[in-house]
Length: 267
Image 1 (tube, rainbow, N blue to C red):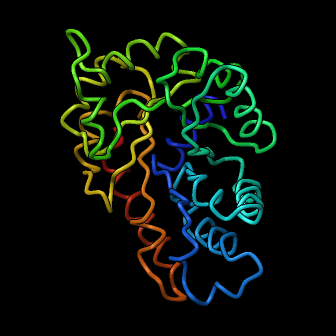
Image 2 (image 1 turned 30 degrees about the horizontal axis):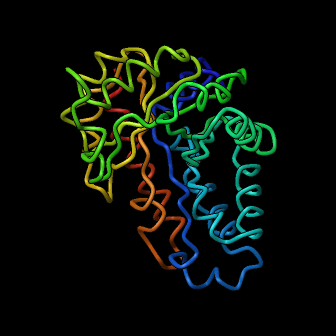
């Protein structure tokens, strides 16, 4: 999905919600455990309930890789089930030397029809460039993350600037706002004004709303640009809000609530 198509979906749905399918088999409702493929059964129900209210799904590949072959099968079925008018993110956080990154790009852009993959930039340009060679595909590079450990490196000084600032400035030159996004954690709301000055035209994937305590209002006010420029991810706060047989109904209701709040921020 290219930038124009993504913006079109955001404006059509009046939503910049991304639903995270961080599906932990130990947390899905008990009645699904007897299904042939419990993870996919759970994902399918969540997708059916939330699709009208979100523009994107983020699939955290770790939860699928942990299940071995069965997990990869569930991952592939999930990606293929999501409609093509939704932006599909493989949250894989890859980042290795060029030849290896090329294989990762093939895995998520060819073997699986994902629109984007999350990438770690700390091995340099050759670790990111292979993801930027696919037309209509995106690299979503780690910028300033929402975890406590962000202070260990990302918020440390690198000369006369913070390391994350150097990353944003450098990486933004490797691609364009048409194929490059940044992960910016919702719990770093105080940094969003500065981040938007550094990268005024790029989209941000923003995790950390909901269970991690990030404020949708703060993010929307400080980071939105003329094209919205945001994909705000909610995972646990939607998919695990209800552990009963009504889990999908609850997920759909919560997704709608997020969409309605987002609509009020879209100018």
